[in-house]
Image (tube, helix red, strand yellow):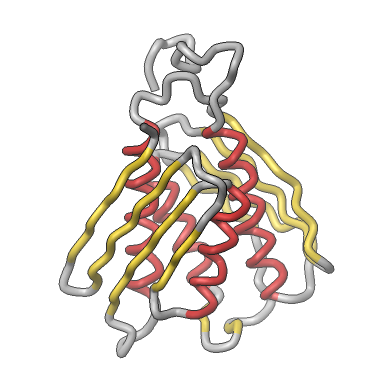
Length: 195
């Protein structure tokens, strides 16, 4: 039941995203941006969320609209799949090492979007990919998923490792947060009674 499909079409992008929160991390992501596809694969695999992404964007301009709008659509799909959030753990966190890099992610599926981003990517490019787009993706995901998200790069030398550690850390935190809490599977995880 915790599934959603979102279609988003603008003059800049045409996107379809499908997610299954109770999956096993099966993914099929095609955005036309190789490094970004690799990061989305990590997000799905480590969150154990089945995810299919099809994005056609204005790559003749640059990757910005493709990355940002895909983040918007994934955020919307997560929010729709979560529904009223009954039974979820709500919070998740992860310290994730990857070679020289270590990234900490903590999130709250609160319905109140907020991004704290303290990650230094030492190069402007990873291959042909603009490293500033890593933050743009998480800003879009947070805003449209209703997620309070804190991501802190504790250390790292290699931009690829740092970016990948960020995606994996967020994924592992998301996995924890969307899981059903067997002790309160019938309750909204808030004293307010709604999220």
